Structures are given as C-alpha cells and as structure tokens.
Image 1 (tube, rainbow, N blue to C red):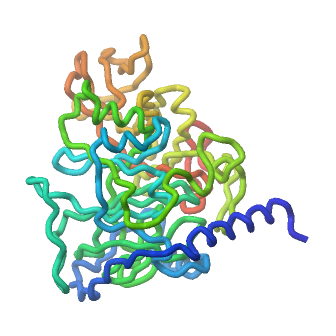
Image 2 (image 1 turned 135 degrees about the vertical axis):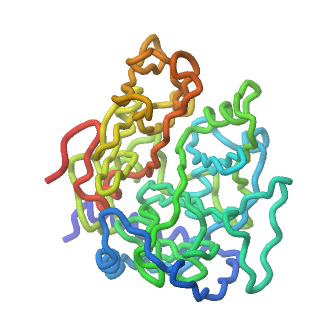
Image 3 (image 1 turned 90 degrees about the vertical axis):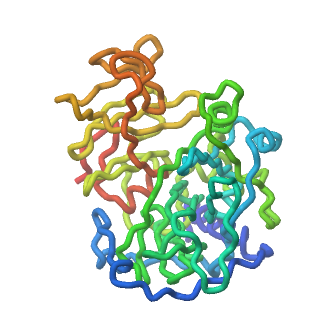
Length: 410
C-alpha cells in the first residue's frame, strides 16, 4: 500500500514529466565537434569535499526521469528588454535573479521564465553594444564572452558560470537526469555531465573539473528595478531583463510548481518526488538557505533568520563573515569581515536603522560599501553563495554548519 506522502510525491514526479513530455521544441543549437583539448585543459580542478572517485559514484546513481536530453529546452542567446519595457509584464513581488557582468552590465533573469527552461546560455555584447556574430561551423566562440545562468526548480538552486568545457567555450543543455532532485546539465562540446548545484562534472572527459562560477543574487523585482533602473538609482551601468520572447510556447505568467508566497505548494511542503542520497532533518527540507564553502568547511545560512536580524556575524572555517539583508530588494548577501589593516575583523550591527561596524560606527550599505565614517569608500569582499533548498544542499554537503544554529552535524 502506498502512503499518502509517497502518493503525493509520485503525482508530483508525474506532473514533472507531463510538463515537458509533449511540449513542442525549437531546434537546439548543433553541438560543436568534440575538442581534443590538451593536457592543460583537461586537468581537473579540485572539488572541495569530493574526490574524482566520489563523483564517479554519483554518476552511477543519477535518477532517470524519462525525459530525453533537451526535452526541457535551454535558451541560447536570448533577447533582452529595458527595465521600463520589462516592467509592463512583471509583478513587483516576483523573484528575479541578478547577475553583474564585466563592464557594468547587469542582467536580470525572471524566475518565471527560468522555471520552464532551467538554463540560459548568454553571450555578452562587445563594448559597442553589439553581439558578436555566431561562429562559423567548426569555429570557436570568443572566449570569455559566454556565460550560463541555471535554475533548478525542484531544488530551488540558482548558479551562474563561465560557459567553458575545459579550455573551450561551450553551451549547456538539460540532460534529462537528476541527482538528489537537482538538474544535471551537459555541455555540447564534450557531452560531459555537470551537477548544477555544485557546477561539477560527474561523468565525461572533464570528470572532477569544476566550472568557474560567478555570483547570482535572488531578489524581488520591485527593489531590483529601483536599484538598477529607477530615476534616483546610483547605478550608472546598463541593465537588461530577459525577454519572454523566447521562441517557445510556455505559460510564463505562472509557475507550474506553485508559489514561494503561498503555503501548501511544492516550495513549502515536505514532498521530495525524486530520491536523495542523504537526508538531514535539522531543518525543513524546503527551507531556503545560502550554501557557502571555505576549503572543506561548508555552511548553510538560513535566509529567514537574516531577514529577521538584518545582520548576522559568523565564522566559517577560519574566515569571519557577515550576512546582510537588503530590505529594498529582499535579498541576502554574504561578505568577508576581515580587513588587511586591522588585527581583528569588523563586527557589524544595526544602529538607528543603519548597518554599522561596532569599531567606528561607520555606515555600510547592504551591498557591502561604506558610505560614511572612518572606512568610507571601502568595500567588503563578497562571498559566493548558492541559493538553494536545504534538502538539496545537505544532500551534497553533509555536515554543513547551520548559521545561525547548531554545530557540525555528527
């Protein structure tokens, strides 16, 4: 007899398959011929907490969903809108992902679009504002201009990285398999498999190699449009928003899994429709955390707790850090607190509704910049963090320290 919980999870898994099983697809870009990379390009980057053998074992236990590769269609060189044009079809409270690219370019990726595609293969414009022309058959794309932003709806994890397979620019698609409920991507150069949350290769020529990640900020559209597109904004760069004109027929106005702002949807309940390798019950499985790494020390910062406190000071490994809530954008950022000219790291608190350091009472913005006081114009070093559900982070990074909270799980 199937339990009610198991039955609900089975129904959710069936819904996951039905969403894409019969969806008409636009042709994906053709795969580049496998590159015979030299030894330098194939050298694995050490994956904290995992050996190459550990990753090989993970490849043996991936979950086959029944979907073929690219049945969930990744986007390739998408279109973008201005902030004002995008605002016509967006809700103030909807979740968006913000990426700062080189050259003061900010691109905003609405979650309601990524939930249907899970990966956006993006190409940055040159300084003149023009996209480089598509490469000719067999020709490599310009190195350094390509990035991939990926969102895995079942684990709520969002990552961005340089679109490189070893030394070769590539694009990434959805393989159709999962690991701990998390999407597994493949690159179109070597067909290697990459776990999205870790940005690590578990199968193929690049097994053991990790993609070069860049920060992604999860925030609310109302604050984002004011910070980066409002008339009173201090940001003087260029801001673009991913367009819904993708070439695919999807219901971008709704999320097929529910809503983060309503109870009793997938994002709030305890259902896990696909198996996980490890279960850590210290937190609700869908609790939103920011996963961080320091060498082989792992932590999970509870976003709701940072919202309540606004500032949380902590140390992971030997690195002093601070988590800060940006109320305008409803975003949480993490920074290092150490300063090269100070013997002790700064410690932050809230004083008269301002974020200040206890040493000098200098005022700091939620973006880690000091605007007034002894440390004026200094910037805190940001910490790369992965926005994710707890069950997924804990499945990959066992013994993570919960911040604020308990000590290491034993």
